Length: 193
Image 1 (cartoon, rainbow, N blue to C red):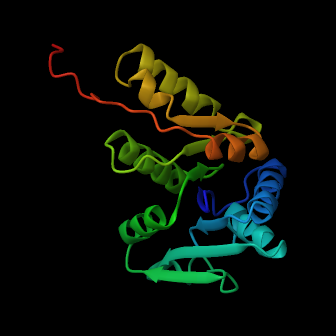
Image 2: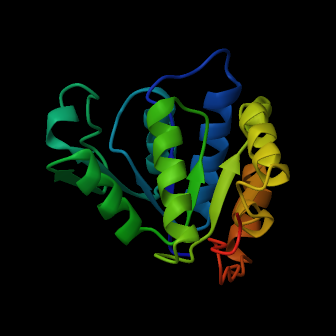
């Protein structure tokens, strides 16, 4: 991997654990000479992550829709700020620029980005690694829901296993670097009744 896209909140969340994880991940991204691709904001976990990468002399590319530049207080000091027309353009550009994806703690925007990039992997649009950085078991309920989706046969186990789930930034990056894409030949079973 040369670049990694991180989906994360424009809020800081409760307590300090989520911000501390952003700091650890940001330092690690810079140390590994990876380019951070992210949503372009200067607030919340987004801002903490990007500013930490910059603090350690790393490269940061922010991708932000024009109408959010003012609302999200875009981080102008990034290595490269790409202003696009829409949220759809933002996700497409982040996908194009990234060799892998991590979802950190965040709200519905973070979840929507994570699920879309995962859906693209299921459809074979890309074969890049996708991780859930599960700080303070933030994604625990969602992981339980997805496990239930597998047991209820709405989600194939191999699709679920595409996701790298970890609570440690260092092992997450290592696992993503060693990722072998899973080949899912048949994600729809037309013979089921």
